[in-house]
Length: 433
Image (cartoon, rainbow, N blue to C red; front, side, top):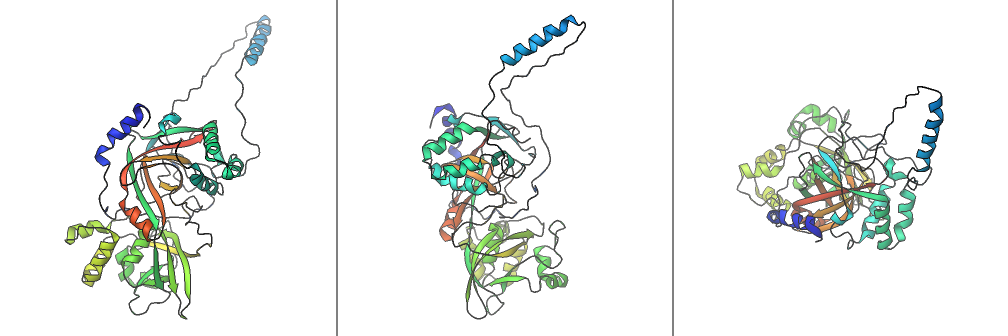
């Protein structure tokens, strides 16, 4: 580590350096698609940044005609001594997303590149593909740089690093009390098998949005959806797939998307991605809390929860499911042959190991971020804010996208550790406020 700041980070994280062997299942994550309008929070705050800019003002009072010549000479002299203008950004930028107002939970503190521990060693090229993906729906402030970002896709990491340092300014993220340390968790895209129709042991469905669904109005709780006739009528014909156990669809709802091999009625296999399409707007509650209060189970990994559900009485399993009132609805998509990840809240595919979910009231979607975290996995790397989740709230808070499949799930379940974040923002652009 370089400098006193690095020593401080290491010292302050000693109590966090070992994450639990298996963290409780307590993070609900939605991978969502947004439309072209700005869906982020619009509450405003006064950004607490110190810009090193000089300001001057002059009040001119003309009291006689003889002063006019003097004033003109003064103006000309001032013009001749003005500092040179900064290099202009590329002209005619493509249209992009406007960034949201922050919600008052964070402040951006101008920082030095020396604070970004491990920056010189990171394989920047791995993150560059995530930056290129963000250019499909860029923030307006980044849109002008997207031709450069795309062109540098084949550049050497050293050249990519120089570009970042030339055009972007690091800002350390703090909460409103000045605390810089936050929390990193991880999520993934699970992969399961299911059937298209309810049959035999396949009794546990995932649904598309019900008839008459209004995403803003909310809907029945999980227990009400299972027991009210009106809810069941609205869900009739909306099942996308049926599963042979209740935990696989629960995992898909927590993670926000997943890949499913669906057996059709004629025996064909459809490889589908079930992507987030909305919720009933009820609060998420971790089933691990119910298990802790009502059973002897103390290992809350998905594997352990699934084993418990296989041997527990059916009414007890149902009560566990109902303890989480939140219901997530899905839409079916093809799995791209390119293997690209699911689309996050920014509306672009996620990149394993280089995309994070953030609170958009603290960090705008599409912003490059330097991430430093220590614990089950020590991470010093460039990532891009491209997603969010209902449990991802606060200034220094992120969910690390680990990729797809079982190995990614094992990794994601281990990550619960301290975090520091720096946003990389265009030097000549005002920060969100």
